[in-house]
Each structure stands twice: as C-alpha cells, then as structure tokens.
Length: 259
Image: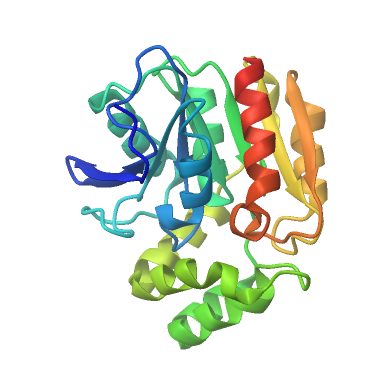
C-alpha cells in the first residue's frame, strides 16, 4: 500500500518518516540523514516526491527531533546508530544520503558499514569538515540568536527565507549541547586519505552559493572517489534540499534509477 502522505513511525529510539509504507523489498531505499542540530524535516520534500520510484526514509539522529537517546560528538558514533536503525528496520537496498554532518555519516557508512551499501549520496559536505570557531562561540553565547542567524548564513541570497522556517523551528528545539556536539563531530572528521577506498557509485551535490561547505568541497570528493557523479545545484546555499527541492529531487531520482 502506497501512502499519499508521509508515514511517521519509530524504530526503537529512532523517529523517522517514510514516503511509502511498508517499504517495498524490491526497491532501493534512500536513507536521508540531516545536518548539525537539524531533523528529518530537512528532507520532507524529497521523501514525498521520490516515493513513487523508490523507498524513502528520513530519520532524526539521536537526541534530535522526535528521537530519543543522546547526541554525540563523534561521526563514528552517529554512523553506528544509523546503521543499527537500518539493520533493525531491515531496510532494503539502503543508499545513505546525508547533508553536511549527515554527509560525513554517509561517508563513514560507505567506508565502514556492514549493511551492504550499493551506493551513496553526499550533499553539501566534505571529506574534512573543520568548523569556524565563531560558530562554537555563537552557540555557547546565545543559541537562539545563532539559530536565527542561520537564515543568512545557510541559504543563498536568492532563496526566500520562509522556505527554511520549518527547519529553523526544529533547530530551536534541539538542545544547544547537542548542536555543539554535532559541530565538534564535524570538526574532528577527516577521511581525506580514505576516499579511494569507496568503490560503489556516489552522487555528490554541491550548491553554488554554499558558504559553509563551498563547491570546492564537493569537487574534491568527486575527484577522489573513483565512481562519482557531480551535480551542481545553482542559486542555492547550504540547505539546498529546502531551497531548491525540485532540482535536488531530480538529481537524486536520476542517480538512484540509474543504479
């Protein structure tokens, strides 16, 4: 049975939304992973729009959104929690798709995961994600002001800020210490020397106006992962799945169907 609206559920402590339920065992499943301080709301447009062609699942990382558990300051720990979710839910043919911190988690899964990943999707992320000290200072000084400031820092000047309001509302509800841990996880993440170990097909999306993970980050991934397709999303910033949902959805659909 194919649901017209998203299906909301839990697997243990992990809350998630799915575009179709139950998952079709004969179709690949894109597993969407959000960024620092975020939630699955980042991916709602893609979860719904792609559900006619594939399984789509977007989860809340531990301590985020509607999930239980605690946040961490380790990409490896987040990747372990995502893999446990995938295995517990018996997700068919999983394709991890992550943005920023979520992209680091996806890279970690492709490098270390045991769930037989056949492909991966990396959105506005990098093999190393050093964080500006100003971000840590802003979160510690006044978290809600930091969230409000994300309107200008995280999107393109050409994006209507109202597009990202659902995500900002979710970020405001995330405990500041969890968001701090997320950025610490990013700051210590570095798999630059290991990209050549990834042998499965990978889609890399890079946004033209992304100031947090500039286009050069995506180009580096495309140059060093052997089987990569690089797609540029024009007139979008760091939150391109919400800023330019049609373009991001189209790129993901074309890639997954080509598998």
